[in-house]
Image 1 (tube, rainbow, N blue to C red):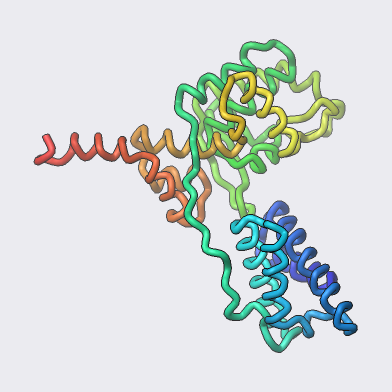
Image 2: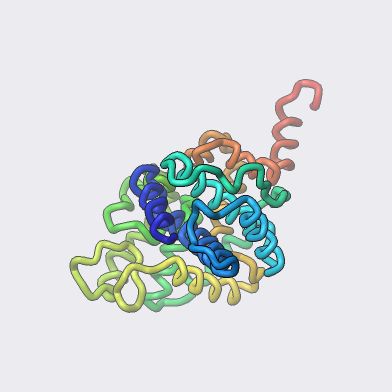
Length: 302
């Protein structure tokens, strides 16, 4: 059964252009579904196959997830992965009935991102600047660049040396679906990256062929997990909420841009959102800015 899953993953990567991270998430969810389907078939004494996986099996799978106390968001993601997979199987005529038809997902309340204040961001960025080690100079460049651009963590660790222009102050990154975008960055971030590349990175890399902009102590490309661990240390030293993650800087970037007067379409482009509805979640966090703009602009509000 896993062969069919692998065929679907190949379709997502090659034909749909899904990122490695997205296909990895689909792999994890569908591998779990395949294991459940095989266990159910064994319990019934039948040969495991997707053609024999019924709507009742799908409902049993959902019940199993709930009994294992998965969060509603996780269950919803796994259901979405199953729906996509079985839709593909139907299109390929590999099954005759879709077991996910009329199977609902858990209702999930819309959770708003929780950004840091401008002062908290400033305090966080000051942490590596207080140190003089090569790692701290690298970390300062990374955090400044994250906040300057609003990039996803996966986009940051995927950067190569030639993706950042420290003279014209912009970064080129590749988002979901390998879509390229150019994002301007403030001068302080560009200078931090420039200093890191010229003075620090040569002491960290072990091979002249390494293209990664940010590398770990082994001289290899830094991973998302590595960046997360680095940030945790600075969050702790800054005395901030332990719930702050690398993605919090992206939320903070978007919120502060809108609060500062940037229009929604511009922020959408900077974040690399395909749909503006994704960006609109941040407008709920800038009501005070909207109120001030209203009072300044409306002729009857003055």
